[in-house]
Amino acid sequence: MIMRIMKIVFVLMLCQIGTAMGDEAKLIQLSRESGVKIISQAGNSSGSGFFIGDQYVVTCFHVVAKISSVPDGKGNNTVNWTIFSDLRVLLPSGETINGTVITVPTQADPSPLFGDFAIIKLGNKPTKSFSKLTLAAVGEKQEVGDTVVFSGYPLATPGMVTHRGMISGSDSAGDVIFIQAAINKGNSGGALLNADGHAIGVVSNREGGISQGLSELSAYIDRTSSQGSVQIMGVDPLQSTKAIVQTLDQYISTGIGYARSIRFAREYIEKNPKLLDDK
View 1: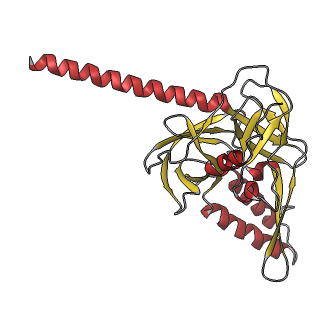
View 2 (view 1 turned 180 degrees about the vertical axis):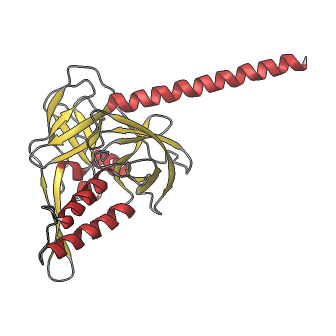
View 3 (view 1 turned 120 degrees about the horizontal axis):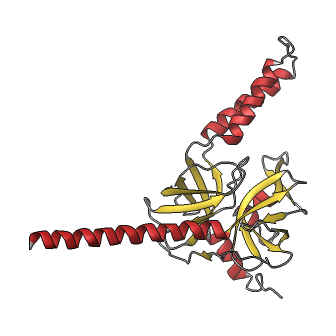
C-alpha cells in the first residue's frame, strides 16, 4: 500500500514538473515571437522592442531618439531630443518594416521622455505570423524572486537572444524593476514577461558600476590626450587603452539590469484611447 502511494506521488510530481517545463517553453516562445529589433542608421542606434498590436511596437524612448542635456547657466538642465526619422523594425520572421514614433513628448505630457517608453506604428501590417503581448494590469503581482523572461538583440549578436532572470527588487515607487540577469547594450526596449506572459516592464539599462568606472577612465584619457601623447613603436598607448575601454563598456554586463514599469506606457495609452486605432 505504501509503495503504491509513493508511486502515485512520484507520478504526480513528474506531471507537475512536465507542466512547469511546458509553461516555461510557451513563455519563451511568446517572448521570442513578439520581440523585434529596431534600427536607425542615421542615429547609429540599435535596440529591441515588442508587439502590442498588429502594427504597434513598444520600445524605449532612448532607442528611437537622440537625447541631450544642456545646462542653462542657472543650475538647471534643459533636455533636448530628436526622434530618428529612419526607424526600421526587424520582425522575428526576418521581415523588415518602416516605423514612425506616435508617442511624442510634449510640454503638456512629457511622460514618453521621462518614462523612457515609445510606441512605434509600422508602415504596414506584417505579412507573416507574430505574437502580441498583453500589458500587465494595475495591481498585477510582482514579487522579489519571481522568474522573468525577456528577449532582445544585444549588440554584435547575429540574432535574437532570450534570457531568464529573477526580480531582485524595485525602487520605492515601483517605477523601476531590478533584474538579476545579464543585460547588455541593445537589450533596451525588450519586454520583461512574468510567468503569465504579461509585459510587466520594458528593459531599459544595465547596472552602471563597471560602466561608470570605464566612463571615468575614458574621460581621463581624453583630458590627458589633449595635452599631448607619445607613440611607442607607432602605437598610441592612450588611444589603445581607450579602444579597450570602449569595447568593455559595450559588451560587458554586471549581471544586474533594470526595466521601467509598464505602467508608464499603459497609462499613456489609457489617456489616449485612439492612439492604437488602425484606421
